[in-house]
Length: 226
Image (tube, rainbow, N blue to C red):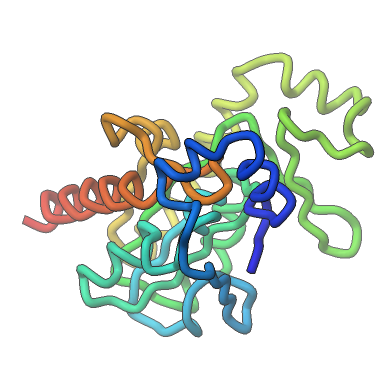
């Protein structure tokens, strides 16, 4: 099964042009990779209350990895908590806030972990309620020549302001419900392993990187719980 950048087309291209890297990271001969989504559209079992909520982008979804190798699954299992993985492919901090605002009061988790997406991304809610993720590396045609977006992306201060507003919004929601919040920036995942490993698409972080990051989350949770 395939998902997002972990597509069959990309995999076949990698087998043709990057076979050594596929073999190095264990994706040349491997068991079929399943993507299972719950009835709400998230990559985790059906939601249960009083578990762990994870917020983030495709590195939280775990694109290119078996579900059991993703950091939200590893952390939740280690803490013996149900996992509610709210990660969204291509998601922005706007996305994290929107989902936190809706789901945290419903799920009443015991812990919220945020792996913040790249700050250059934004989410636009279009008429009809559709969420569009805008990433400078892959701008939708409708927004490519948009004057407002060009001005927004031209000044890094907009990225930082957008990040801060959404982060403090998520933090406030957690404080309202007396839920611990652990927040990690996207570079944490990229730098955590001395030698970064890659998922099947050779774009996203691999098994060891997710395990190392999960260990970091668990250590931080242990520190704040002491």
